[in-house]
Image 1 (cartoon, helix red, strand yellow):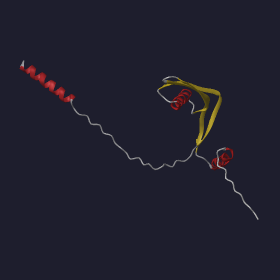
Image 2 (cartoon, helix red, strand yellow):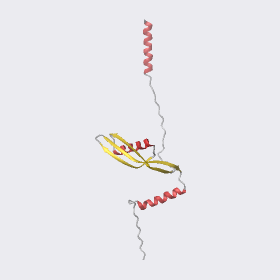
Image 3 (cartoon, rainbow, N blue to C red):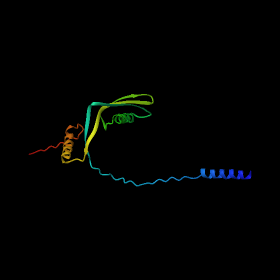
Image 4 (tube, helix red, strand yellow):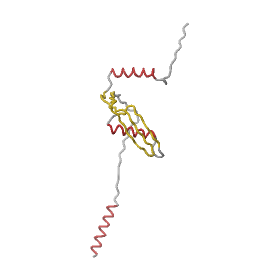
Length: 148
């Protein structure tokens, strides 16, 4: 009988010691530089399929309008497999604690992603220069020259 008590006491002690063991978790940190990283620009062609409409509907609880719109846009891209929803149109219904957003647009897929060549760089510069002509908010620089 005494041996059984000793055996039970030993088993209980071992269980208690095992269950009270400490665990130590380690995490490693790595310093990340805060200087800007230079990245080469890439050129991509956007293939828009005007015959293929994409749409999604989401309900967001305790959210704001912008987050709900982003969630609907994400669902539309995820469900259709497109890279971008071209010309998205949002229908928003506000409830007491819920925002329901429906987004619809056209299917867009990026293709031919490449590094820019000289022709691309020239075209980008021309477009940037032309943008000033079409931008109504662009600053107007006037120069008056008087000749005698």
